[in-house]
Image 1 (cartoon, protein in one colour):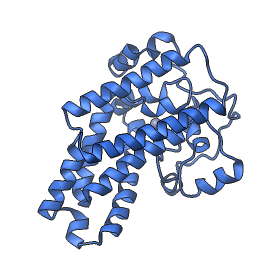
Image 2 (cartoon, rainbow, N blue to C red):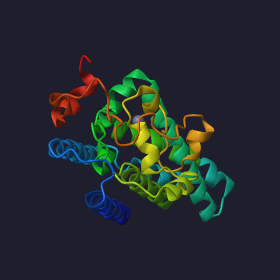
Image 3 (tube, rainbow, N blue to C red):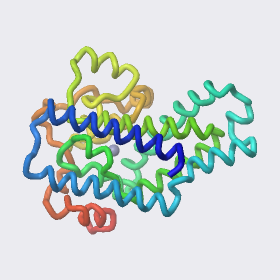
Amino acid sequence: MDQSGLFRLGIFAAILVVMALWEAVAPYRPREAVRRPMRWLTNFGLLLLSAALSRFTIGAAMIAAAIWAQANGWGINNLLGMPALLSGLVTIIVLDCVIYWQHRLTHIVPVFWRFHRVHHCDTEFDVSTAVRFHPVEIVASALYKSSFVLLIGADPWAVVIYESMLSGFALFNHGNVHLPKRLDRALRLLVVTPDMHRVHHSSLMKETNSNYGNILSIWDRLFVSYIDHTKVNDHDMQIGLKEFRDMDSQSLLGVLWMPFGRR
Ligand SMILES: [Zn+2]
């Protein structure tokens, strides 16, 4: 593994451990003791399959696109000759907006939703939910992001930093944890918090189709998809999708097959 891969893996592992410990010490919603082993097997099984598929397909596409753009003077940053710090900031902000729209489209376009609902059919909400994606969605997302890396002319290290932030924030804002109200409110002005993102995992469709942001919370406010809190309270709200609550659809094989099934 190269330097940037090790950097990303290190950040990911550190935040995963911190969040898992935080959830163990101070879980916000009561934990489902019976379902958790199966959920974690499914969620981390998907993570391993996605990592393997990416490694043998287009896992390095974003970095390769950034290196190619830099070498050939491609993309807005390279054309404008921006200073490194400013171009890094532009890359992070633009990619976060791009991901907001990717996420929103996965809810709107029926064929994309068939894959994305693997993420949403998790019946609980904890740090493992952050890695619960169909491997096909992971690969498609890498291709989508790579095209914008070319367009922006992103610096390779800005891409590495953005990808680390993306996975770090996903682990954080899927945590079954709770921040003091005033801290949550202050953070939420700029970034997505667990309380804000939990609304997105509500089984009420209006709430599922809200709060799409990953790092910055500004996109949901700007594009009018922000919901402040769930209609039911945080503890009694139902997480997941109403149509996929049976054990069969929750297994690793069940979620892998989900996009191609009849339902
Ligand atoms: Zn979603």
